[in-house]
Amino acid sequence: MNEKGLLETLKETKEYKTISEETLKRVIKKNIEKYDNEKIAIKEIKKELYDLHNAYVKMIDYKRALKQLEPAYKTKSPLKIKLAQEKILKRYDGRRMKVIDTFYKEIFKVTGKPKSIIDLGCGMNPLTFPWMDLPEDTEYTCYDLDSEEIKFLNEYFELAGTKQKAIQQDIISKPVTKKADVAFLFKLITCLEWQEPGSAKEIVEKINAKYIVITMQVIGPGKIEENKIYLQKVLGKLAKDIISIDLKQEAIYIIKR
Image (cartoon, rainbow, N blue to C red; front, top):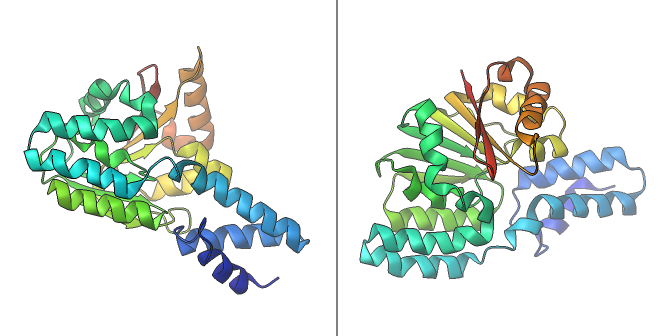
């Protein structure tokens, strides 16, 4: 099976062309090694890429989102900016937006207000910056695998006039080592483990931050403790003294290095 030829085919396909090349290579290699049958391997590659990427990326029309934000920023009204961003964020992650007014307050009670943040597998989370109540010159660097999303985020940062940067990077193939006060891994750990068992621990070990903030979705009673046990199993000693915060919609787990 020709890995290079398959990579080039996927890069030219509408559904996959915006995914980072490192991600495509990783998924191709894994499935080709796992399946002898070429048709089955290709089917599994496309299924994994869809589950990883297309299922959530389609929620956001980036061009439309930017057009919705531009008038709000022209007004320079913090309230109008928040309202414009809230409309977009509710479509992307309605559960977090239900607790957004306390979300960062609870995190920064533990970590203190950071001067620098790295946000891994960021999605649309950078649009929640106005709720962080941090200075505009806070260094905020976010990472994800979709080129269109990264382009949109950098255009948004320019519009907002903040000291932020979005980088396209497959954090499994190339873990983030940039130094920061706080690292965000929001609803990311299970996704990493689903792709590559053991990758979450490797990524967290290489994070160069004073605090690592992990979140997981909460559904039903007992889930807070269940998630904590899961994290301790996946991350080992790294999660030994983990701090838990229950916000009902989303649980926060903080590791101090």
